[in-house]
Image 1: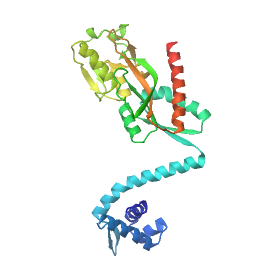
Image 2: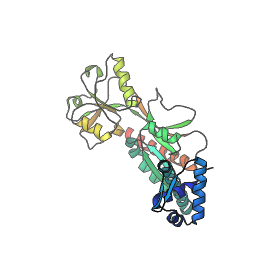
Image 3: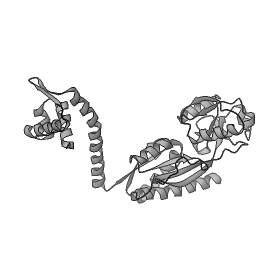
Image 4: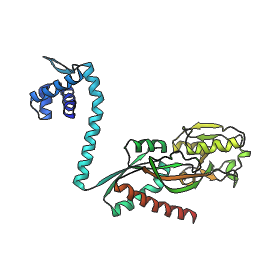
Length: 304
């Protein structure tokens, strides 16, 4: 049976090029290093190391095996360091996945409020909703902020628990000095020659809304570019190269763009705090409560 100590011995031999030096680095005796190496070779039924007068080096199979186990050991070492730091400092680390536009609107205030009352360290992982869900299922984040369309929920299922934070109407983002900006309300019937900047993913909420509206009009969406980079999207729209479907919360006011409602029903974008079903760390519940409070304040401020 393999164990972590055997892996550490193999990597030390690779890095030091000598059984003696590997033993020194690991603070072991040479017989102990040799025992771990032989046990690992016996389990795998291959020779992992070549010994010669010029030194010790890994065989090609040994190198291949070492490359696979090195990142695993690095992650284990990192996990051990994090747990040790939390134990010594009495701090809980909460990892939250979030898409950037709403994350910058809600998370800083929520983190600040949470840290006033709880000894919690928060790490934010920036990712699109589908990636946040993947990270959540893989245990790489404790919770996430995602968005979808209420009438077409992409992430419904018994394995997830969603708490709605915001419902935001979709708007059309156009160049501030463009022809479309002169209209108070845009009519898609009159926008047949308009180009659109769309997300790479066909399942992304704004893409599905856009295709639904155009299908109802018997037309196809004209795409000028696909991008998930908010700065690129804003830049293209600001230059008058196309429009984009978005919400007011996602608009970067540093760019010369404005948003307009449409005559057609574009629906809502629902922003949710998502966790795994079943037991979760207490810090996840704390963050959910704080985010709900912050979102309610932001929603009230926008309505006012």
